[in-house]
Image (cartoon, rainbow, N blue to C red; front, top):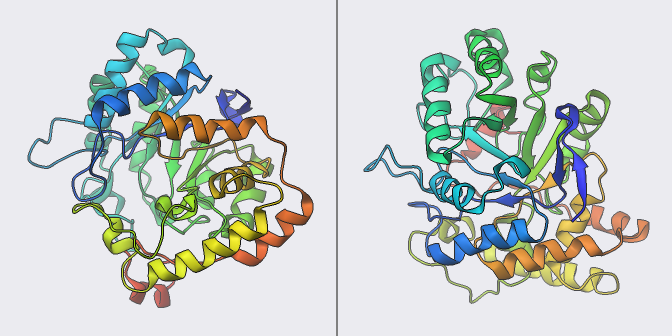
Length: 347
């Protein structure tokens, strides 16, 4: 395993971390996980030297059972049985109280992150994970306008002073990689988690240079475009009922995806063994990135994704060629195209 420093936290984390949204199933989002296989994937990840596991209070959550947090609880079981808590860096997230993604302008922070809610979610996550501290807690959505409403700052500082949270970060809104820069100027946050992949290269414009200058840890999420950049989808691919990708790749989107990934496979064939290989190595070719967190609920995925660490960096020629393959769009169900004209979406 190879490691990088998570910005000013000083934490050494594996260049490939483990995303766990899919780990324990998630009603209306990810379904079909084999829980025994998911559990094995945690062991395999750590066995191969992985030490950064990213989860969230909301992963697997169902409002019919509001006190259960399946992804965190599976990780908590693993931490107890695996006996490696002190060797691992565990990150989680506080969801917005109004359960609205993304955080739109004009909605006050008091509707999304009131102090008592932040504290409750931290306590819930500590209990679910079975640990006395969380290495990195992140706000699960964000809006720079929250800077004009500073109540949340006191509880961030309180949880750090108490030792319950070591560091705080932000999981920024989908496709809004710069909607956090004013907040980062406060110095309260150490990391940003954001979408970054071959199709969505916009973070290179502002976020990456800012992070390099300010020593902010960067966690790249959705590196494989919800499976689109695995190269395994075809025009005949169908998704299980309850899998949000039924809508994500609906209409003519799947055909367009397949057309683009077929081209990418040809472009990369001389240097890479698969589109997964290309996609993850492209992200890690950016020295500003601390870790990339593909979702891994099968041991086979763990083996494949971590194997890229044994390979050399992509050539300059290939990196330049990949700049031509940007495909900026937002397929998430909560995305409202009408908001783009109002400046709320930064794609």
